[in-house]
Amino acid sequence: MRPLSASPILASAGMSPRRLFPAGASDFPEDRSLSLGRLTTLAQSVAGAPHLWRPLVRHAPLERWYCRLYRGTHYEVWLLGWEVEQDTDIHDHGGSSGAFCVAEGTLAEYHTDELRSGALTRTEHEAGSTRAFDGACVHNLRNEGPGIASSLHAYSPPLTTMNYYTGGRSGVLERVRTLQVDGPEPGRTELHPEPHTLGNVG
Image (tube, rainbow, N blue to C red; front, side, top):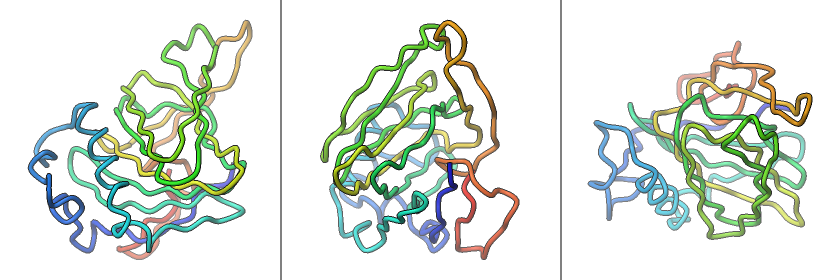
């Protein structure tokens, strides 16, 4: 799987919760982790304000695109663009909880909270739908078409580690790699771009 393309970190330029969602900034305190309910509201709030992300979103045919909209000590927000057939591979979030809201298009999610079963449940998320998950969730998100998709993702705490899995013997999912990350996908973490550019998300 190709790494995600990079785009500016708006938080580096002073983007704050108050600027991202001024009507409810007090609902997203910067001094503690967010509950699943708050993460859901956060993803929905940003997705519901297209003037914040619509000018930024890109869809790259060869690699999925991302842009970090905000990062604080206890949570972060990402914008992702999906071409048809792009996916994430089966992964967890290193103990972080999260929520995503599909802003346009449709994403299919293959997910489980029980590694021993090895059975992944498929759920289709259309534009406007939101899904929250805790640190036990293992899933793969995929744009199965027919058109492009865009989604907003919130994580608390910010992602630092992700584990990747494959179907093992007897259908049990087996962890095949663990990566230190700085965002929603593994990538070329050995490169370090300009200070206001998030490159090589891990």
